[in-house]
Length: 68
Image (cartoon, rainbow, N blue to C red; front, side, top):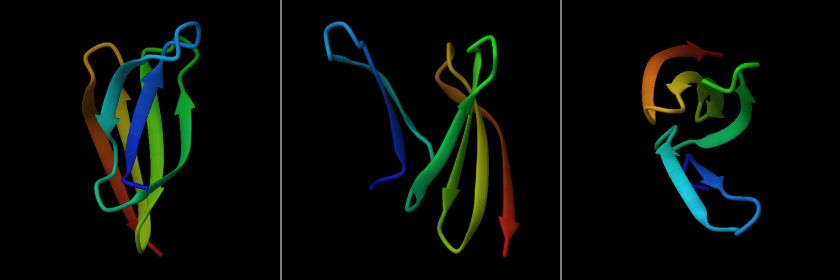
């Protein structure tokens, strides 16, 4: 597990795009907003890391880290 999120075309099974969501981490959960514009990823590597992504732009727009 490398902390990345990969988008696939479900008809062709070809990779469409990818995001390096949480380097040195594992993506444990992901959620799309109802419009599909944003993706939230939650990873774990000694703490909780939440990242918010603009899916169309393929870039991170915010992050929140919380230590347990």
